[in-house]
Image (tube, rainbow, N blue to C red; front, side, top):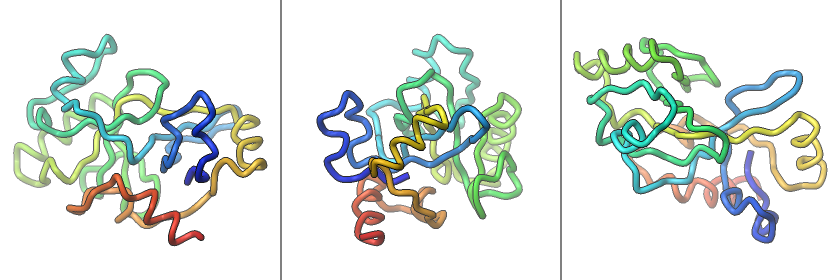
Length: 172
């Protein structure tokens, strides 16, 4: 989802201003996603030490930046592009890990030098709408539904702060 310019600035959801949200789960009653372009000053070590939730953690990812995934919960989600690491495939070449077993496997892959920890993106929290609420927001043009390539989602050496601008230009 690509937020519409100036649609959220007066609303009580400032985190949706110029937001790019990757939908990670859809069921009959709700839709969940993570905001791809909201960095924080926290590392995953900070998230693990501050969380009241049972955040599964590994020192291999201590220095990894934590992004603000949304204002719901404290759950942690990791996105990556390593098919051999597994997880839930969200789209071609993009996988989500969110269980203790997923994080343990990722930690092992880093320890064995099968993957670089910088190739993973970590999110704390998520966005959630009822299906009716999101349908209403789409109907009124608050969001553009777009399909984007994995290179807009996963780390590739660029600055993810500009992903909204890049996608907005491509869809205008």
